[in-house]
Length: 433
Image 1 (cartoon, rainbow, N blue to C red):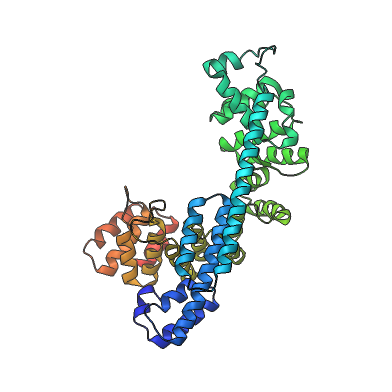
Image 2 (cartoon, rainbow, N blue to C red):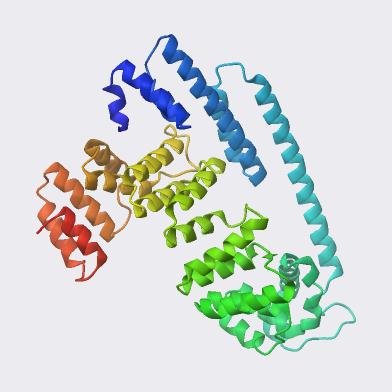
């Protein structure tokens, strides 16, 4: 049932649907089914729905606080307060106490990280250019120039991102490694690789930076080889700065046509840390057609990050691939509903045009909720030149409206659909010649 059907169903049916929505753990939909209804039964169900929404938003506020996103914490606290009908005051107090603890812990972490960074930058001289040190030809002359202090600090920060037990090895690797690391950070993997290939194969950081070079150069096979060597040298995969050697290996394996191998790597990582690589895990599950598990992983991610529109689109994609089109529509509607807000209050979250156009496409293809689909397209106008998918959904809309532009749209679509293109079958199914 679409959103517009809410106002056509009888009160009894709407109450029954609200009960089912609660059982399905969808309090927002239960609330919507009861909109405008009065009476003891409707009020009781509404109160349960609002309590669940309050608790869900308080949990989300804590999750976003742990992630360091104060703006989303504020949004969820406001939503919780908006839905609160009384009786959960103690839960609000506990949540605010927890938020204070998280903020204090984050502040302490930031202060400690800054202290360590300043101490390290005072202590280490990664380019050996300090007073009394040897000059390193090539680095000072060819790289540092007038920006010597800035680049020395940048390299210090790069070293700070390495696993702690590997940082001391940078001095032993010397000037060539330092120059290669800076070249890679500045987007010159070709130059960096030239220096790295002649360095020791037994140095874990050399293997790591070679892997990053190969990955940036579009050679996932070589990157995977270097990542395996890195893991063998250090006794397992590690987080390195904002990256993770195991997740990078899984990505490289998938890019070489071995998603099953990538999935095995991520499963091994998640066996010791279930929080690692959730999105990649779901992508690999979908790539290996394990749609039910991918669906479960994405729903868990959405529960922790309810405002991430990309997760709803990914979930819809998994469900479409698994043949669950109605469930895909439901995921997209849920994402649009969760991220909806009144005009003038959403400057940080632009309208999700992609979700609206995808949902409209599904509705029109399946002959469902035509008016809803057309409304979605009006809310999601094109920006820039249309893609094939944009032309296709516009043709579906023209067909639904009986628009005279349909023949011209179809002619353009067929002109841009080469023979053998998988989209040709889709076009023929919905627009038989």
